[in-house]
Every structure is written in C-alpha cells, then in structure tokens.
Length: 524
Image (cartoon, rainbow, N blue to C red; front, side):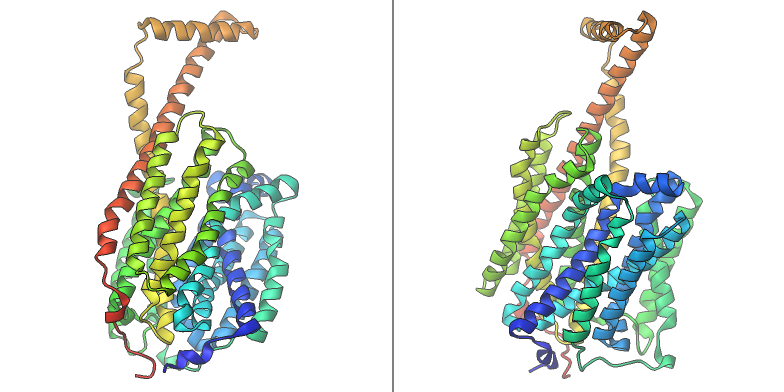
C-alpha cells in the first residue's frame, strides 16, 4: 500500500479535479499554436520585423521546455496545490499582459513568462490526473489527459483564425483569463498536495543544476526553433548556443549524478518502462507536432486556403482521437498489452502518411483528406495512452511526477526536433526538386513553346503588351515549377515520416511488459 493512494479521488470530487486539470493542460497546448495564425496582425500592429515576430512562438516554447523538468522538484518545494495554482495565476496574468503589450519586446517577455507557467500546467495536470485514479483505472485517466494533448494543437489554429478574422489579436490571449480564474479557484478548493513532498533547505537547493538545465534546454530549444531561419551553423549565434547546449547537457548530467539533492532525479530512468516510454514519447511528439505543422502549411501555401479552413480540416481527426481514446483505455484495463496497441498505432500512422503521399497534388480537394485524417486520428488515439501508460505503469509516489516530467519534456522536444528537421529537409529537398524540374524544361520542346505562347496570349487578352505578356508567361511557368517542386517536397516529408514510424513497429513489440519491472517505492 503506497502513500500515493491517499490522493485517489472519488465521485464528484474526482470529476472536478479531472476537469480542472484537463482544462489547464488544454489551455497550455492551445496557446502554443493559437498565435501562429495571428502573427501577421501582430507584426503590423506592433511594427515588428519578421524575425522579431517569430520570437512570439520561440520564447513561449523556451519557457515551456525549461520548466517542465523542474516541475516535480518545484511541486515538492511549494506543495503541488500551491505550485499548480501559482502556475495558473502566472499563465493567466501573462495572458492579460500579452494582450496589452504595446511593443514587440513586451510581448516576447510576457510570452516567455506565460510559457513558464504553461509548462508547469502541462506536466502537473498529468500527474494530478494519474494520482487521482486507482491503479486499475490509470489507463482511462491517461485517455482523459490525452484528449487535451492530442486535440489541443488541432484546436489552436481554427480558434486563432476565427478570433483574428472576427475580432483583434489580443483576444486570443484574453480568452484565457476567465478560464484561468475558474481553474485557480477550483485548484485551491479541490486539488491536494501529496504527503511525500519534502522541502529542500536553501543550502540543499541545486542552484547549479537549475542553471545548467536552463542553459542546456533553453539553448537547445532556441537552436531547434531558429536553426533553419538562421542557416544553422553558418550563424554564429546558432553555433555558440549549440556548443552551450552540449556542454550544458554534459555538466548537468554530471552534476545531477553527484549532488546529494539533485533538482532532477535522473535515477528514475533506471526504470526500463520509463526509458522506453521517453523514447516513444519523443517519436510521438515528432509525429504529432510535425504532422500538425505540415498539413496546414501545405493547404495554405499550396492550395491557398485560409487559416480557419486549414484548422477546420483537422477537426475530424481530433474527433476520431477523442472517440478512440476511451475505447483504448478500456482495452488496456481488460489486459490488452500496451506494446500491441502502440505498434498498431505506429503502423496506422505509417498508413496515414503513405495515404498523404499518394493524394498530394497542386489542387487536392478537401474531401481527399477526410479518410486519411481519420486514420491519423485513430493512430494518435492508439499511440498516446499505451505509450503514457507504459511509461508510468511501474512508478509510484513522487516518481510518477518525475516520470511525467521526462515524458512531457521528450514529447515537447520531439515536436521541436520534428518541426526543425521538417523545415530543414523541405528547404533543401525543394531546391533539389526545383533544379531537377528546371533541367527537364527544354525551351526547344514544342509542348513547352506552345505552353508559353498560350500563356502569353492569355496575358495579352488582359491588355498586356506582347513583351510584358511574354515576361509574365515565363513567370507563370516558373511559378508552376516552384509549386510542383513544393508538392514533391511535401510528398517526401510524409513518406519519410511514415517510414520512420514503420521502422519503430518491431522495436515497440520487443519492449517487455510492465509486470516485471519495479522501482523503489516511496515507502522504501
């Protein structure tokens, strides 16, 4: 009998605690994508450059990823209820301040602080939900939490697009305020702090570990966010921060293994299931955030859709995930092995990627995406709960919070790695396809000549002079080549992501079950 059982909730109290936690997780995740469609409005309103406005996203992500590994320790220092309520307050206050920002620098600072509060919400919510349910109900608890994690990135763009199109960009931050206030009141009333939390004396606080962790994770996140835009290692800042991240990681790991009271308990990774789960969480983040990034980008840049249209396209996939997750939770409760469901999810994600590869054209219809996205939603539903349950299934007491921090951090970093890898791959692959297509354009080919003449006559019919019309015809042909090379690049992205998930299937099946792995309990 572990002390964690004292945190199990029942009846209406469990429902309130669950709704409070899942709402906070949803707030954090929606806010990570909701601003994407409002960047142009912010840029014009604040007089920012393209490079500066990108920091609205980057600063939030850096704040997120720095605080996630620290959440378990911070919860012990201040008490989980107090820390969770303070994080909601910081997130809500900074949402108000973001909406009231008059300069781009103010917005960047408040977004970073909002990210600090938001990162704590994401991981602490999962820990609260996990510990509020008895062991036999943990799979269903992860299903409930997974709804926010999977659906959140999908809701952000359409919600942000609707608010931006019908109101003003500050309202994408203001909508957090009433929900945040309600969440704070419910947290103070219903959320409980575990008895096993132990404060560290000021002399025992691992300040050096905190600084090294911030250097390591913060530098890494910056490199991933800005690498492609700044031409990677040809940029001095990227090079310096890469070195800082590597050195920070080395000295952080060394520090945590020798300090008597480390800020991050690396020993929890001795648990075989958690190690496997963190790797799978990284891959899950890569696929989840990567595909959520690439589909709207394709529909807007190639098909010319609005942000709202692109966001609405993802709704069927999110609804499928929402329907599937409770079913997967029930299957796990009845004894179906996590490895089998996760492997099936990996395979279905591969199927959805290959399906995408097949349907992409310069003018793909909206209906062509429907069933592909349904399969993607089914795959995500089958992946998230088994991976999370497998990761935390043999952890107890405070180790649940520590394990949750690792899986949350690797999922976030997986998404950052995924987006960075995809944007870099696309930039280089697009140039390769373009050069290949241009090399096949023989100006002496009668078909090419007829195409140019037809385009020229079309522009002349609109009133252009012959010379001007000819130049416009060449530009139109060049645009056609550029568009086709972009489509081929998107096809390659889906193909390679799909292959990556397919390769993972046999490795997932080789992971041992959770019954034979133990970790030191709180009682010990």
